[in-house]
Amino acid sequence: MSLAVPTSSEFPTLAREGLVYLDTAATSQTVRPALEAMDRYYETYRASIHRGIYSIATEATDAYELARERVAKFTGSTARETVFTKNATEAINLVAYSWGRANVGPDDLVVLSQMEHHANIVPWQLLGCKLAYIPMLDDGTLDLEAYDELLARSPKLVAVAHVSNVVGTINPVAEIVSRAHAAGAVVLVDGAQAVPSLPVDVAELDADFYVWTGHKAYGPTGIGILHGRRSLLEVMPPFLGGGHMIARVGDFESTYAEPPTRFEAGTMPIAEAIGLGEAVEWLAAIGMENVREHGRDVTAYALERLGEVPGLSIHGPAEADGRGSLISFALESAHPHDVAEILGREQVCVRAGHHCAQPLMRRLGVPASTRASFAVHATRDDVDRLIDALGTVQEIFA
Image (cartoon, rainbow, N blue to C red; front, side, top):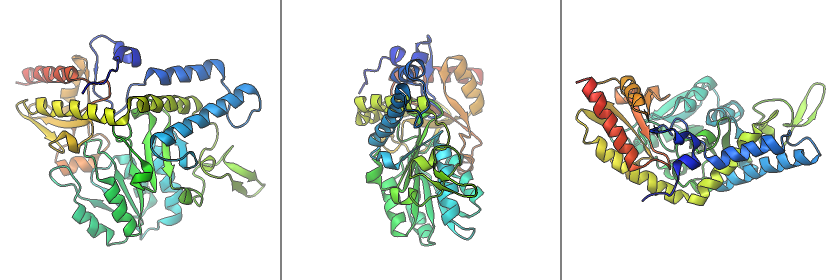
């Protein structure tokens, strides 16, 4: 299928002649309605939120809280369970610090998967608890039999990616959550790659914590989301201390506001929240089922064309149905960094490196990979440009 997305009008950066942007898994282009909404805030009602009682302060507060309602609705959560952060990394750290320090001791177990981003590994390492990893099978899926064995060890938390940022696997999150809950574990899901490309319903998934970020979902940088189960948020201590997150400050102790306010200390990224609210409204108008179908079509075509390139191997599931809208690959004749540099000269923007997933790279037996990721504006023509540019790489390294 084809989405009617006029790239140069909806995504200003893509107006640059000849540019093919295939790096949305790192950061997306910001859609114009989000940019315009942020401009309106800065130009017509710039004020601090939740403080002033004059008209533009009220307008700013209303716009910020409307954005919260929009992102909650977009992912099947509620505003009372939606916390703004600066990115998904901070959202995970918030849970690790606030919930983790109160509930996970040095002898307790946290279960991760081998395909986690460093943002869903390092915070749990810092917690000083025991860690175990769900192995990844050779086809890029998680070993759920091994997962059951780990659950038998009564972990306090299971933390997994909804969609891998390297191999692209769409993990069976609902099943992972259900099994974890049956074993008495709390579950955190990293949805950074899922929310921009798949229909996501946090309530249906039943995850206790679900995190994602605006800059991969056609919104601005500097804004992330934590959806948390209300009963857990209510008993969690603050992550940061400062203004707004308090109920009362005494000389020697303080009491704290109810969630989500408790976790939003100081002046928040107001414009960015408003911009993200517009971005998810834009996505909702397209329809996430349509976004998914478009991504699956372009990804399937890319898998087909990449499979025709001599000496190229693809990491992860063989079919587009089992993966998100991204593909990591290796070319026998050239290092991923060289591949990405030459593609860049051809104005084809991809990512190369370990993609902040070094444990997964060790599992794959490679130091790095080249990754192409396909946004709502990606087309089969973009894939053809990628293949042509890979031909240039092969000519250089022949």
